Image (cartoon, rainbow, N blue to C red; front, side, top):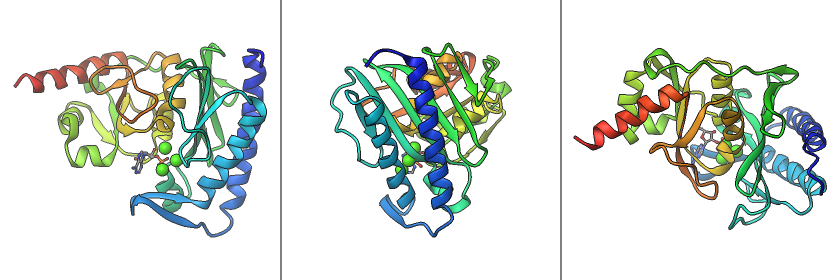
Length: 263
Ligand code: 2AM
Ligand code: CA
Ligand code: CA
Ligand code: CA
């Protein structure tokens, strides 16, 4: 297909709006909830139906592309060559089940491993964050999102995943202690939104490609750093211990890691 990114963006927004309507409609009926690896790792009928819906739509829009989806309805990816769509049909499934709120639909579009467009749809608030280098910015629905202020770790709140803090992986407790405080939302997508709103300065979590594909594109476009906890680029074919942070906070956090290693 031609590289008409504007048209592709328009088509993806239409697809996501339809997906949101489907999800809202399915929420009217009781959910079917299954455990994946544990009682804290859930999948519902809505996750599966929405992934199928999105991947069908993506195949129509971009038949040549590879598609990676969390629930397994896409392709088995072994390389990031060409165009790759990375789909998380419901991010924050535990919130979806327990709160019927604080979850997102996410799509990241990559070309030869480089993020081009990202979409995080806050379903219950009906705000679609979208953008990337192909659009030259990030928007929350029609409103342009400003770059978050580059604040230091001590001056802001940090988002985290519960297990990392509980088990004190990668000096999490020290990082949290040096920040102004910790917040846990239970959705990587909602965490990215909190950063875009300037409510938090970063997020640390162990994530799969679909958890961070869209967020990485949006963060990079807004000057927010995305790396592994060691400051390395993410491997988008694998899981990563992900550090998302303002430039200053990233530097502060990498320094904590270094100081502790040298003890
Ligand atoms: P999910 O809801 O799409 O699975 C919750 O802390 C956040 O981490 C969510 O964004 C969740 O995405 C993600 N996550 C990644 N791996 C997970 C796992 N094994 N169990 C629960 N949540 C996981
Ligand atoms: Ca999941
Ligand atoms: Ca997810
Ligand atoms: Ca998911």
